[in-house]
Length: 254
Ligand code: SAH
Image (cartoon, rainbow, N blue to C red; front, side, top):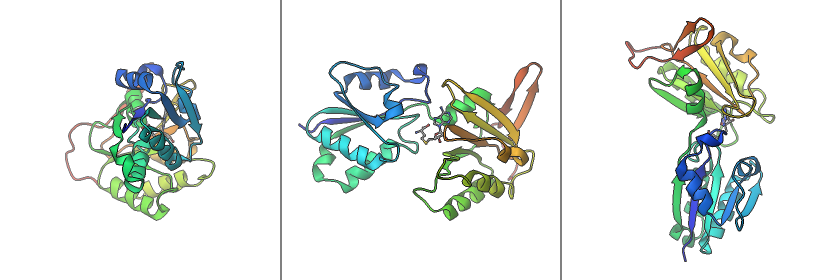
């Protein structure tokens, strides 16, 4: 028996964002692995075991789930958002690549989910309507100098930039440093969107300009979208503004 491992995206938080495919895989699993707050979102089913682990233990969690699946079980690992965006699917691939030969025989299903940048963008208009990129500001797995180089390249090339992991208790200064860096390339008036805990209780959306971006309190549950030179804001009476990036770019920006 070669077993089966599903790597499942749960979306940004609201149960309505969980896809029917994800629900089906969750219901079929004999064992569930994941970071405890994500596992808490999954309805409890009789006969299913749960293996919660700490946020930082991604490789160990992936290895444990693969070991379990390789015994012939049907196992699921859950991620917030999409499992392929700064999440468990890559950790599982890393373990398969470096692990025992038998793990390559495990059937793998990756179930996509609504990633945070899409959930945030949908709340405010269409900031990702033209070319964009996504960066994690966490320097746990890459040097800060590389992050700066990518911020420079992305902003000067005219990409809208989605920033995952903007800040944490262990990384208090990185977000301000990133904003400082982006100001070298973008006008002070560039719209910056902060989406906190989107689709969850306590959701908050703030739009400010780049010159004020470091005055907003971002946290680990915040996704930041920094506009390009083309990104604009439509003010509306009695309604929140629409922020969008037109589909066409007229000239080389920067
Ligand atoms: N796999 C996840 C991302 C994991 S990295 C996904 O596809 O969404 C964790 C980061 O995602 C957080 O620091 C935050 O920047 C962002 N994030 C996840 N859920 C969010 C939500 N509901 N609202 C805002 N940002 C969120």
